[in-house]
Length: 297
Image 1: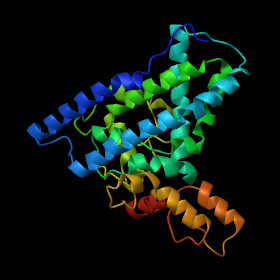
Image 2: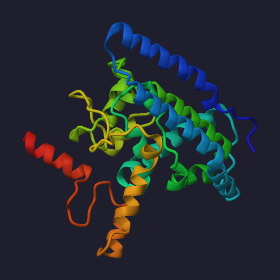
Image 3: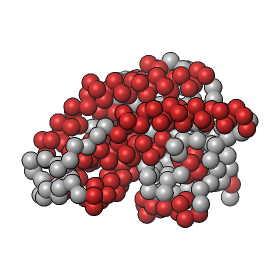
């Protein structure tokens, strides 16, 4: 067990989230720039955030139970010194990068993550628009190496909370650019606006949580150029939280159980990139980006 008890930092940060949202709203209202709030959209985001908290209370034992189980097979016990916590934070951020990338490249995982991209606005309430079904993607498996290396499950959950808190402030248009050295290393509002853009050049880019260096290392970094258009390639047109939470799962079910396709096709409808179709009637992000590149050449 770790030498220290790790607090629930996300719960502790909730009052700061509320204050920050109010300050951003006041700034936008007074300055008439830096983003836009739409009441129904913001309320939907808040409802999705509340549902995510409930999911954590009901199903959080799944990830923690898994981490606790594999902890017995750890190679080392690294303890809980400050240096170990910092190292855990960095490696967890790398794991987050891959979880996030899988969330855009594997439809089964996208079915949960798509919720976060469903708003056509970009403000601090968008950060709270989170999935209700993340547990079912089993992406906690990606963090297995952290536990086996000797980072205690409680520490991994703690640094994951810090990662989530960091990402809150980057969901804003009120901040244009940070200093150049900061933009070079850290994820920023500018970098994350790209990630939320539905512009073809912005699709599947900037997966970083805290450190943008992962995107630069793995070839997924795109700098902000034209103003992003936010939302999905095909927007939902609804503020119903239940539909927002489940629409892609419903789509997968319909695709998988359609008639006259092979078992391979059924599996691809679950695990191929979003937009894949057996008859080529839809377009993936790669196809949309290729078309955009061709049109601009």
